[in-house]
Length: 217
Image (cartoon, rainbow, N blue to C red; front, side):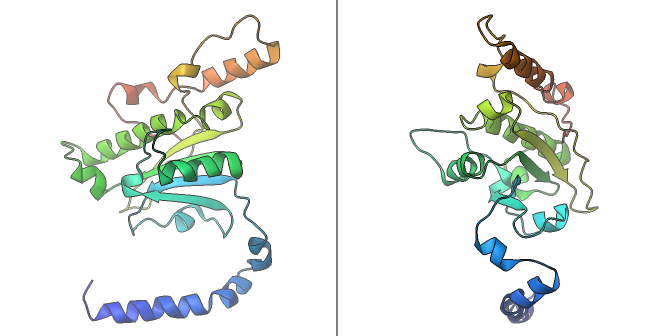
């Protein structure tokens, strides 16, 4: 951006901030309801890249989408000895807000993926990066039990910056290794049924495991 444009951009931002309440009313956004508390059903974890606007991509309204934006949309591994701010946000979404769906959304032309020294097809590397974050997230202690009981779904999306295209959700998910076990005979039949249903949707697309990234919803 050219330097002379910056003051005008900030002026536009300030004007929009000052008129937000009027614009919200015009679009039917109930600010009093929002002030009473949030109750989103969906969380999105994505990159901090300025070209990504989750609300615009998803068509969500205020209160619909709980966002976590990180460098490259990276999900840090859970460490009980040194919990991160990202982990605290994920735990709040799962345990406090009882989020039902989590989208991990990668994107093309990602500088974070490129700066990692990735060779070859950068788009394929971006796809694979999203699948890796899905795996890391599914190992969180607050996430794993809800994958088993079917109250949480994980989705992997990839947004093409140049075209605006994103794949349609296919609702597939992976269980963490510790939970991919056969239920004991002592388990109630209902629980065994839930476990089997979870196992049927537990694997990320096999081709991605073989190194050919395939995006799933």
